[in-house]
Each structure stands twice: as structure tokens, then as C-alpha cells.
Image: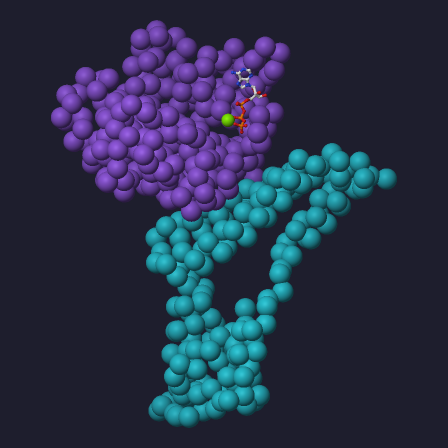
Length: 174
Length: 226
Ligand SMILES: Nc1ncnc2c1ncn2[C@@H]1O[C@H](COP(=O)(O)OP(=O)(O)OP(=O)(O)O)[C@@H](O)[C@H]1O
Ligand SMILES: [Mg+2]
């Protein structure tokens, strides 16, 4: 997740103080998983150094949280470029799991147990996300759905692989 | 949540030479929602039918609220199914000649509740499932998603202790399917009913409290293993 680009986008609406940026980001993009102050600080100083934001006001007190930031023209160009760029489709964790499964088969370990353990873990997380979704507003529901669809895709892969384990074993065993 | 309400132990069932269950066990505690998953033909429906007393297993036992289902008379067993159990299947199985509210009222009417009272309670359930507006329509005049909600209302109107749901969302698109599952889950939690939920959709199973996988006629409680 590009925190920097999100900050720039949030600043495009209006200049904001550091603490206000963090709050807006946490609320909108990362409910339940707030940014660390260190992340906010590091991101803002990088944006400043690259000329994508400027400080346009100070509140009494110390630290980046108290400064008010405004986005620059270069900053707006940067968000625009980011928004128009497609994201790389992530291969997620299949490759790790695939490696584990193949290694298990190669070394004569029970590969189906690896798949079962992963399946249980995935469904446990899906239940947790579903509970969050059920109590949430529309924004929360959409964020949760995104996670659920990805977890579901992983689960389907786990099922498919479990069903083809014998076939795979025949190929990878020496 | 800890009380074992329904316990199937070491269930076996053959259809001719086809083994449908080979030593399947499942414990359902009061008020919990259990998802039963597994590939097609693995024995999920057979397990559900055995637990519900619809199919008699060749071997093994099913105990409901401390009573052995196989030792009950047919009359006792059908009374149990009518009063303590509710059912939802993939295709609502509503009676096509009856209106939706009459369909929901049916289990109450069979149990001797007067028509007016039965229909009043049925309307409440239709409202709860957000299909109060189809009460007067025939099943042929409503959508699949509405039909499943009516079927859920019918399963819950007697406030059963256990709802058996076999692919209740199987014929619906994912958004409608999830909505039906969410309403079913909520209604079950509100009334304290346990649910045995057969599904192959992980996002539907995620509304359950736990998952059991049926493989080649044997059920595995993966969470207990892990
Ligand atoms: N009434 C029946 N007569 C003969 N064979 C049956 C009958 N019911 C089930 N079977 C067989 O028993 C096995 C288990 O069937 P079951 O319907 O329990 O599977 P399932 O897991 O519910 O499958 P699905 O996901 O396709 O609904 C299958 O091989 C099936 O063909
Ligand atoms: Mg079935």
C-alpha cells in the first residue's frame, strides 16, 4: 500500500496537519490497523524532501504531527500518475505454499496436512473478516469483501491442489 | 454453547455398492453454526440426512438431546422433525399452490396452530427476512433469492433447535447467496438455533462458527487436528 500517494491524495482536498492526515488515512483506508507514528513521520519527510508537499503552517508544539502540509503541483502530478497506473496483480502466497507442498512430497512428508493446516487458517481468517464485515458500514464491507474474495481464491487453489496431490506426487518424486 | 445437542457417531451408509458414509462423526452443540464442506459426492448430504433422521444409517448412532434417534418410532421421529428441526434446501421446495405466507405457516398448521395465529407469526418471519412484500404471492411469482428467504422463514417459524441447511445458497448469485446466509445466521443466533450448513462456498461457510470437512464419507474436524 502506498502511504505516500494516499497522503498526497488526501492533501489534494485541503491542507492538513500531520495528525489529521494520519486520522483520515486510518479511518478510510486502514480501519483497525492504524499507522505507526514512525510511518507517518518517515512518509512525510520523504514527501517533503522530494518536493511533493510543503509545510504551510505550524501549530504550537513540536514534531511533524503539528505541522500543516499542502500538496505541491509535482505532488498532484505524482498522485495522478499513480492512479492511472494499473497495480501489478499479486501472485499472493501460492508460490510459497506450492514450494512447501512440493518439498513435502519430495521428502516424503504428508503434503495433505500442509494443505489442511493452511485451509483451516484461511477459513478462520475468513470468519473473522466476515464478522467484521457484518458489523461494518459500506466502506468497511467493501474492504472486507476484497480480502474475502482473495482468501476464497486461495482456498480454491488449496482444494484444487489437494485433489491433484497424487498427480503432483507422481511428477515430483524422484 | 458447550452442550452437545446432536451427536452422530461412526456413521456408515451404503447405497447399493456405493459407500456414501464410512465412519463419519459430527457433534453439534446448542446454538452453534457448523459448516460442512467437501467435494461433490463426498457424503455431505447423506451425513445431514442421517443426522436429521431422514435416512437411517447402516451402522453408527445419532443421539439428539440424549435420545437415540434410531430407537424412536416413526411417529416420534416425524414429530421431532416437525417441532425441533427446520430444513432449507438448495431449491426452496415451497409448495407451488400455496402463497408464501401459507408456505411459511405450513409447519405451524401441521402442528395444530390456528390459521390466523400461524399466519401472523409467519408474516413476522417474512418481515424479518426482508420479504414481507411477497407474502401474498405464489412461489412461481418471486425470484430465487426471495424464494430462499421464504424457505428460511419456513424453517425458522417453529423456532427449531436445529436447522439443517443443504446448499441453501447454491442456486443464488454470490451477493444474494451471502445475504440469505447472513439472514439465516442472524435469525439462528437470535433464536438460539444450531445450524448444520452444507456448502461448498467458502464465503458462505465463513458465517459459521466452525468447519468440518467430509472426505470420502468420513468427516474431519480440521480445527481439532490443527
Ligand atoms: N439415494 C441415493 N441412491 C444411490 N446413491 C446415492 C444416493 N444418495 C447419494 N448417493 C451416493 O452416495 C455418495 C454420497 O452422496 P451425497 O449426496 O451424500 O454427496 P454430497 O457430498 O452431498 O455431494 P454434492 O456436493 O454433489 O451434493 C455419492 O457417491 C452418491 O452418488
Ligand atoms: Mg449434497
